[in-house]
Length: 229
Image 1 (cartoon, rainbow, N blue to C red):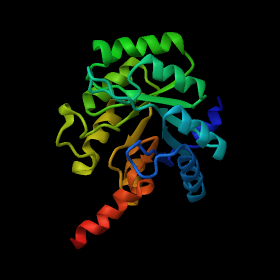
Image 2: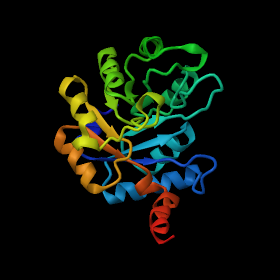
Image 3: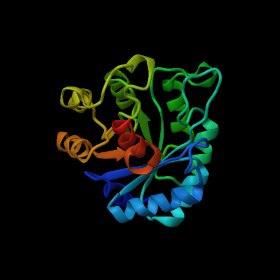
Image 4: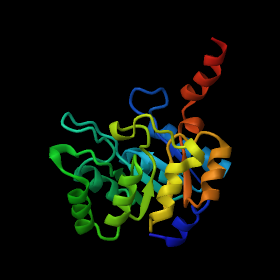
């Protein structure tokens, strides 16, 4: 794994190229081309979902990839890389960073993040890991566990963070995490304008991940159409 490749993301834009099965652009081929378009536009990293998409993206661009695998389980609210099966598959893709839910919510089978993190580290000690968090407390706990990157991905998307907005009070949540965390902070989740992206980098985030507002045409279109209704 190239350390230089990861360091190129510092202070730069990472584009999330994802389309779930029910979405119109769901296709590994399309996500590969989406990643190519992101690279042409200046992205220095890609976030992608599923081993198939990651492999196709890696055939199209020579950029570091933050890999995840979204899966739903009946006994858990956790859906971002929830079990070791997903970790194993992502490792095989040689994705540079694997991101996983690091919230207080229990994984399938009632497993907590501390136990799951320890299992991953024991099996794959050299794999870079990113914690997708929803609160300041979760982020600092993930930082203490030893995650290589701490992300704000799930702010506002969990029961414990419901109603929270990442940009509120000049990104107070991010500023509080930055003040105490040791590991690099990745700003992600509703960073939907160039101004927001610039601000989180100014505050000290390692990089910024932007998704829907770049790569989901139906979301972008809805923003225009809704103001005309």
